[in-house]
Image (cartoon, rainbow, N blue to C red; front, side, top):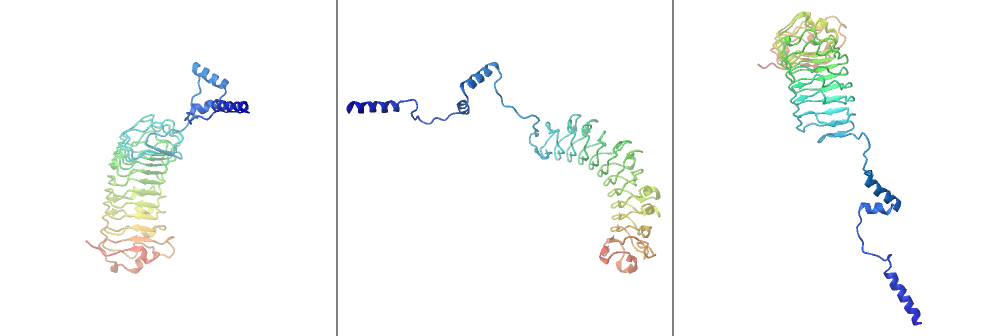
Length: 372
């Protein structure tokens, strides 16, 4: 019995010291786990690859879009505003649709700044310090439709703008001259905002707007003393507010038969030549507030579609019974829904009620008391 027990004891001791006995836990690295799943043949192959310089390396998928440092890139919109940038950043994704570079300190646009961005739809360069633009800066942007370039130091309209351009805003720059052909080839252009530039009437060369079929043009807050000549005859809206225009002459508006909104407020206009407004058969809004008119402009009763007339803050001392409405019934196609006459030296109780017979309702008339 004893020899049998001794034999069992020896077997137990041998089992405790076998290689499969439990050992203390030891943290293993990534390659330890990888080796567990690799047979000896695979291990040898990997070692051989390392010796030959062809070991497996991390491979990045091709064409991963990069995002410029500090910018935010999402849904093909790259936002790099308010970063203090002094130049256009590199590595802009080629599929970018809208690039926002506003509120920086960029001073110049080079030939290659937008290279490869053929899908760009909109570009905002607002509120920078740009004074120099290479003639080929915008050549790659063959599909760009919107360009926001306001609040910079541009001395002239940039050259070679994309023919796809539809809207351009270049107000608050230092543009004093618009040369002939500045907008050549821009057959799709619909809207130009170029107010708050120190440009005079002489700054527009003959042919400056040739070829354009604009609907909207604003040249407010400039140094104009009269309506510029040869603006696009296709215009629907023309805004010349906050200038130094002194009079409207007969031929000034003769080519703008499609105009439905005309802004001439905050000028020095004393006289509107009789018949000047007859060239605007489709006009719906006329802004003549804050001028020096002494009477209601002639010709308003003949404007069948006119609905809004701003005449406040002038020097109008009397209003005639036929100043706004035609005498014949049904001659006016639409009633007025806005006439402003406040801040004029005319008393509302001196105006006959029939004066506003073609106004939709009495709340459409803004009169008020004159206070000098």
